[in-house]
Image 1 (cartoon, one colour):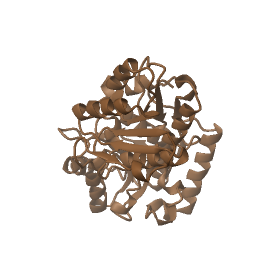
Image 2: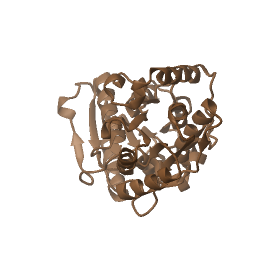
Image 3: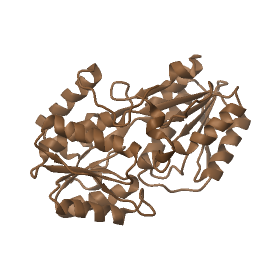
Length: 354
């Protein structure tokens, strides 16, 4: 599957923002915990695209860099950014410190990562959740198979719908977000071809990733058409979608974190991206001397890159509705096993190749 067709410049309006639940904090803030890290000589720097705030996606990266430092008895540092100016400044500062690996998270780094990797061939760079076309040998990439986790949510939606109408609310109608909604659609139709998967509603506007009011408005409009299962793929705007679900009595599905606790009884399940697992695996490959071609990977269910809340160790306390339906949960477990074995192949709507 080729990643740049999926994350090309037209996608550069979403990327990591899709996964950011709430973004807050100070621009360019630096978090350093080197004093309490290992005594070894390995050093790692993680640069965020936005302030970590309450973003579960960016928090997973923070957990990842801490795990990396611990595993290699090294030191880690985090630079938080908020715009292109602070991203570049943080990246240049990281290069000046010459760590073993500089890790970036999100599409916002695509252009500057390539530029600075070419200018600094001795420095190893890792970009997670995006791929740079024609990247230099010192720039590694790792991406997620979001469609696989979304497929599992589709199975749940097909089983729970009463109206036989389901759909998704997207922050923007672009490829990276469609990966989720199209995977969801495949799971629905594989489970029950009689279910109608409506064309997604779009949050849009000036703040499509954080406008909870518009998210709620679009979800309410959707519910008025008879949709009773809604996959919310709108970052912080998910809060409005879930609020609408609670008010109108339809079911919602979260993205990139456990959002079931936002409105217990109204959220069925949600996808999870394990940035920490990906970061640990990729850095290990880099330090082992693997080339960027050998180490660059896509991480799906089999690789431990994506899953759903109901399949995590915290499932029992998740407050997700699916936990009240053991027969549906078993279908999800069976499908996940078949995806791992290759018996089920979830097609990515935007063909990706290495």
